[in-house]
Image (cartoon, rainbow, N blue to C red):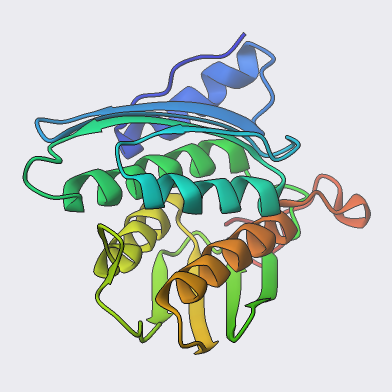
Length: 220
């Protein structure tokens, strides 16, 4: 049985215990986030096979989310309706928020997780590095100098907004560096692929650390 988890981050701990009582793996989550600007549903499974299903109304974002799913080996579904008649800003940012909330639920108490993940991904001339710490502290260091402002109809500034929303609600520290690149599409794609691979590493269960919190503080 899968419960629908609210978009209020303050209720996630309570719903975590409800899910435990239902016997539901905390490696899965479903989030519904509804505002006056966007209506979003996210479903994910950290122990998936890389299957993705996306209908956000922002075609380039759908393509990038597919990179996260496939390279992170997580099953990810995102359905979104937003005020695209204005622009894609609210939709992209709120999708980042909703995915971050779903990740926070799926991570559970983080016992046995590797916690840290990193990846370098090239695509032709472009190369990006992403490093993740499931620290419980939101922080984004984003160093990507895109070579043009638009990728088709997608404003490249929204890449930062997506990841900012995600880290704020997943409670992770995320460093993104595009080390080189001349093609903006390649730059973005290496970032999203590297994020997926780094997330896969950080969220993996470490058999040598089963049942333990990966922190000397005893909590994350």
